[in-house]
Image (cartoon, rainbow, N blue to C red; front, top):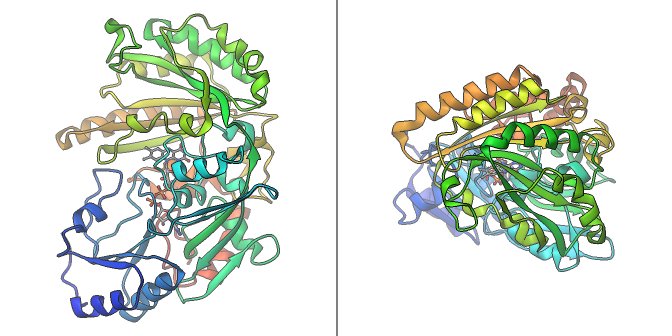
Amino acid sequence: MTMESTITDAQLAALAASMRGDVILRSDARYDELRAVFNGMIDRRPLAIARVADEADVLAVLAFVREHELPVTVRSGGHAAPGHGVIDDGIVIDVRDMTGVVVDPEARTARCAAGVDWGVFDRATQEHGLAVTGGRVSTTGVSGFSIGSGSGWLERTWGLAPDHLIGLRLVTADGRVVVADETQNRELLWASRGAGGNFGVITEMTFALRPLGPIVFGGPRFYPMERATEVMRAYRDVMESAPAELGGGLQLIWAPEAPFIPQAAQNKPCVAIFVFWAGDFDDAAEGVAPLDALGAPMADLAGPIPYADMQAMADAAYPAGKRDYFKGGFINHVTDEAIDDMVRHGESIMAPLTNIILLALGDGTDYARYTEEHSPIGPEARSAGWTFQVLSIWSDPADDDLHREWTRDVAKTMSSYSSLVMFPNFVSIDDPSRAAEAFSPAAMERLRAVKREYDPGNVFNRVVVPLGD
Ligand SMILES: Cc1cc2nc3c(=O)[nH]c(=O)nc-3n(C[C@H](O)[C@H](O)[C@H](O)COP(=O)(O)OP(=O)(O)OC[C@H]3O[C@@H](n4cnc5c(N)ncnc54)[C@H](O)[C@@H]3O)c2cc1C
């Protein structure tokens, strides 16, 4: 249900005339395509979608929403499961046409426009053998990802994407263009390393890069569900003492209907271990050897691969437009009992793309080394040994309740083993305020001060949590 608006098409046409980019109205043939976000459960009808082409366009749209007192949101990759990138009856600032990545190989930095996704970013940085922790699905937007918890296959080894954010340009709701880096507006930079989406529209971000690839050792190994308990216990034991360079994770998921999987095991739950050595390629064989000791998998796709291709490997498993419902949390120690529970839930997975994912973090990793001085993501999250996500993905709206209930049930079981916080990027539509749990009371105080300085009117409040009073 959408509201009648007092804003006329003529007023929106005047906005469009003042911009380089387009303004898409409800009557436009592309309206439905452009208002759609990744999660097919989200069906919102903005008044208009402003396809901003540059910072001047962002300023023009924000002046328009100020003048007409309209709600506004920002959309980049559109992956936020709660659909933060689209709103009813307001203006969507769609940054996808703001593209471009500039890599400085000497300084090991990359500056990217707000609309770039991880596929584009990784290919640009990999030309120079450089990278930063990126999404496990390459169609995720760099900006929405990195102002939240931005976790990926490299998180254990290097820390999160936001840990590497060293600069940004942001337009505030009242039309100020702000540059934040180590020399100016440092509190805004700090706040944007996890609690972004609350201060303005980011037009550009700069990341510190590290050497990696272009060829790395990575990919999934599939084990039959009958071996799940044994494989998961062995994986836990390996990862709890593994060097930080051993990244990747473990998934309970249906084995795909693919020629590399024995026919009898296809479309049934299995254990998939994503093997990834994030250190020197020459050390990879020795580095992953403890995982080789888990015994022969039923299919082994791990091997030398260009890093950018590895990052896009899961894309086919996450098509846009399916129905998504996610939950997640942290576990300090994965007990045998927790594994038994995960296996039980893994056996009951009902849809081919749904999965339960378990990722090792832990002492001695760069993830654990970043302090609250560097990023608002607090000590409770940083000290956890493991993180898990329950990602339910299905097609039929008639099955919504079934899949949501299943997801809640799994998350409830897992939460009996877990700490209370969660990664902001994995909040679900029914508990978006949980994103604030990753921030300690002291960090929250600091965030409130940043909020008061850059967005006192609480115009941008849809990603993490309303910080204004
Ligand atoms: C298939 C899939 C896989 C995922 N995998 C991972 C993963 O591996 N690790 C992980 O951490 N998360 C993951 N996520 C979660 C995802 O990273 C977050 O939801 C993230 O916020 C998505 O960013 P986006 O730009 O794609 O989404 P959007 O929905 O476009 O953006 C999310 C919100 O971020 C804010 N935002 C975006 N761009 C800007 C900007 N330029 N300025 C100001 N605010 C902005 C807006 O408020 C927007 O509403 C995954 C999600 C999906 C659907």
